[in-house]
Image 1 (cartoon, rainbow, N blue to C red):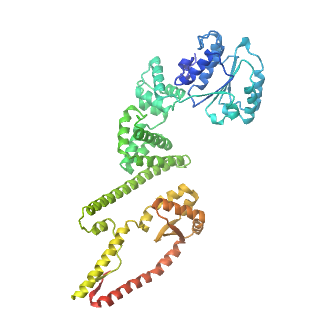
Image 2: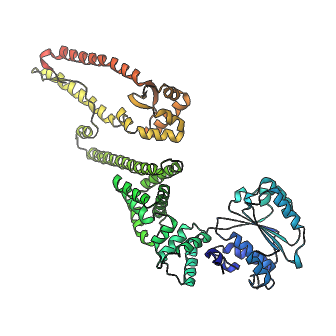
Image 3: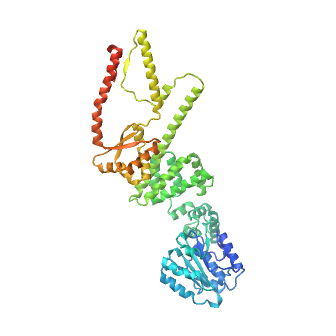
Length: 563
């Protein structure tokens, strides 16, 4: 006898043997028991969950010569012919290859022929969503007024593509994904019956990676059984073409420690094993998803048993904000990897970008914590009632820009000392105010440091605007006006950024990043350099005027000029 694949050999033959679909089998068995058979059924759900199997069992139950209660006997000529695909009363049609109106017209003509000995004629149409609109219209009238003793069973994985006029004429049954526990139990039963030694952890991995489809799980197991006993997790990963969860956990460890070299070495190792960079990123995302579910819901991670403890420990060490940031970045990058001409380079850049942005987040959080600590200390000092001057602390945290100043010696007479004391006190007070306000002032340096964040925010709003803005760079911030300079040959990009819609997108992005309203002005780089150089003499003149005033006020002998 020819070899039968496991999924065919272990296909259920009774309603009781169907795994994980009790809500459907119970309803169908009650319908048979009460003799309330509908003229049309629609079985929908993911692949490998038992739709076609349930349809064949229902067909056998309707035509069985020696039915046991509601279950087919699987021994009469009718049951055996249906199992072998030779029954003249049961027609299995693949809608993917018979999708036209002509095939449906032939089916309608065939329906008119009466069944033999009063049996049911059952038409199982698989992947029915593949029928053309014309074919659906031709089928519609038959479903509305079917001949007696005719039952249609439509099966599909994409129920949303079925016309509503068809859905309203059928009884619909939604097949669910089969749980990991049910699949694992079934695989254990198969291995025991075959006398094969496959480790429980390996069966668990097969059950998880089959994504709720028992047929897929049996197909994977069939291939794994070609290995020598005992069969472990490693052999399963080799069959699946995966790097495995141990690999993903090591990659996550390198992300946590911000180790560029280690993360790229791990990625290279996976690629040298013959794994696709896209698959590596997909598995990393799956691993991070399990971490997210564990930290948010406390659910046990669906990974290999030997990895569970390590995943839980990593989940406890990574803040949820950082975890969400990683997933967001990798999901965007994974979508772009599909179209990358050099998948390896794209994957390496994605890993480096993930670590780099993780560093920025940690740096920002550290700065915020330092500021909060200082603020708490200052508030406690003020509340204690002590008259302590906090200017030095503020200066050490936020250094102020110091202009050219004249150093003034004390004058011996009392009136001069009093006047100088007033001036110094006034100057100190104004400096103190300026320094304390400095923490809320946005500088061009701050803006340049976060320019990549601005570009990312613009890209999320409008990709074309970001493409134009890439050729410019922030060069000056005066008040709430930001000057962006474009290099030579990019006047087209400057003009595009000047358009109202693009300007608005950029200004909204700046507001989102910095929490303040900024307007932009765009210039060419050479124009800005000319303007900047012309302003230098004015600055020197202002400095000289300040020095002259100091000399007039205190005398030339008392003024010392320092660069």
